[in-house]
Length: 247
Ligand code: HEC
Image (cartoon, rainbow, N blue to C red; front, side, top):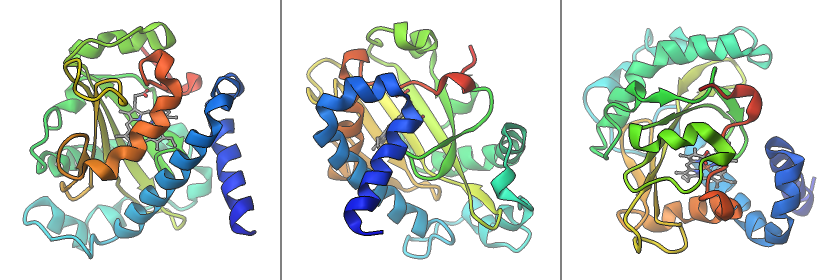
């Protein structure tokens, strides 16, 4: 498959995964979305390559060492046939990994990272996503973001709202491991016109900061803004696929 066809198939996979209506209303923004998706997938792919042993990242002490231990999560949570991963399987793997994940992300010192798992979770079981890498996602919102639970009827979320999306990666041979944490925090008006005043942050599974809007690595998270801009009319929020929602 040549590059053009590959990109086209990535684009159509993306549109399929987010529904026909959305594809139609995004059609006018197709060129922007197209570029964003390409950059986005490349960035996420690079990140995935680094996941296995964080080899090109500074190794921190503490929980990271456990991942290198033969009895650590990467071997322990191994699935026999990842192609048959059901919602229940995904939930079971996630339950095993999630407290370790919170500890790892917490090393970043970013706001909302320490206790996001105590917030309301808006998905029943972790759901697969192409747009955030080939991984299983869960979405949480802090109390200020309560209107998120009205999904498409949410309107504009108030300043102080934080949405946190964590992820687990399940490799082809069935090994499950923590993926990145994706955050959106609604800042004061004027923070960033293009992002709709959302601050996008991505934290790596070893607790290091990949980037945050208007802060360290701001250019690395520009692709988040570009893609979410496609749903500007609903406060830059895409929401969870309907079949996985819970309230
Ligand atoms: C290629 C498009 C695309 C890119 C790039 C992207 N997202 Fe998303 N984002 C989505 C879609 C689609 C959803 C809803 C479905 C899902 O969870 O996959 C979503 C959902 C979210 C949510 C939950 C709030 C909501 O919109 O419902 C957060 C938080 C989030 N993304 C953060 C980020 C961050 C941080 C980045 C960059 C590091 C990023 N996203 C990059 C498409 C994208």
